[in-house]
Length: 222
Image 1: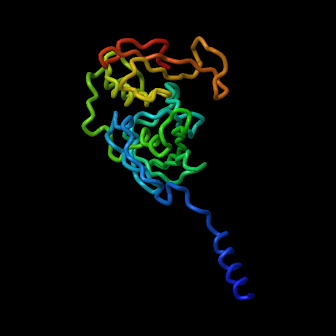
Image 2: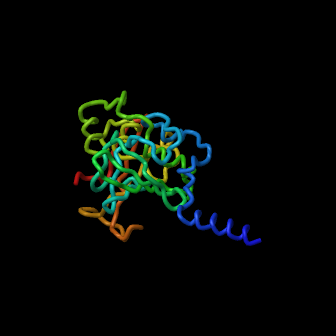
Image 3: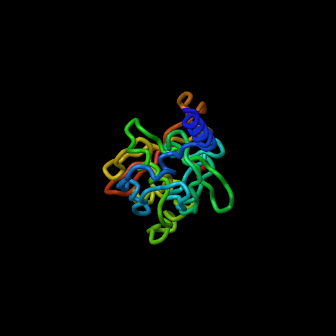
């Protein structure tokens, strides 16, 4: 009896020295490609802790170190094709910590529930298994500048808008929608009350016809 108790105590003490890995660290469930994510950069495959990936689109940074599913049109951005390493996950894999080659660190919050796809598929909208710029058609010089500076431009295809601005939030099928809304911080805008993040924001509207941008409303260069 004493030997059994001592063995149990030793095993318990050893277990206290380390935390259980998250699903992503342990390999996670079998996850198929996200067809929406393939809009730009092709299939991502399963995203894992320790893996090296590339930012699938331009990604806006909010609160200094956070990138989230709202796809803001305001503020600093991490350019499309930036190589990153996934270092850890948190809060049941709904937050993904990444580090760039130059040492910058960010938390990606891809969204989970509320009409979004599985959290392991949602992260594929942010990270690609290969540099998405390779073979990507940037179009005219004006469109290429729009992608470079993360702004929507008349004449862009839907894929080019996604590359420039990220996936439109709350649009589950961008391919079939001809009106996308992107939130922007309220500086210089006709503001409409306090947003979810405690700051005034306003939506810019990108309208398509036959798969190309024909109108961009309520957007101004910062």
